[in-house]
Image (cartoon, rainbow, N blue to C red; front, top):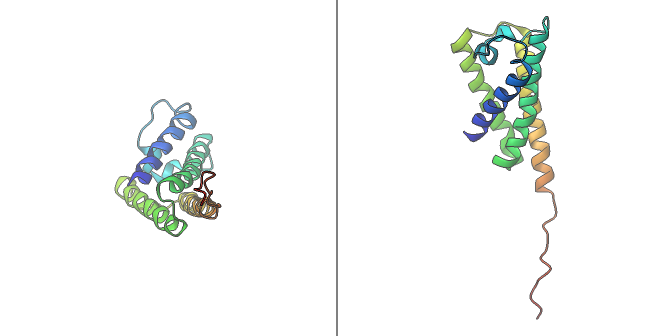
Length: 135
């Protein structure tokens, strides 16, 4: 739950910085309408960059919230499935191949980078205290 909330907060942050400076009014269209993810406009590229950067940040959230490499794919896939359902409700079935590529790349990036970071953390050596009792 927290990872999904943090993902959308991060997406909103990147959208405000990258897209908000280019459009007259920000709305949920840029979050959930598949037509805004386009490679034919600069604003579309800014939307794509927002989604990709949010996926990278999402991998960091998985590291601190999930902490287990085995669970990263499950949490990332759940997030993107929920996002798909919201997009269907908001703007209909995504027919843009660009939307599918961006979200598939975001899912893979979040899951794989999250797993990599969690595995690195799990394989760290456990520090032994310097103040062991002497017998």
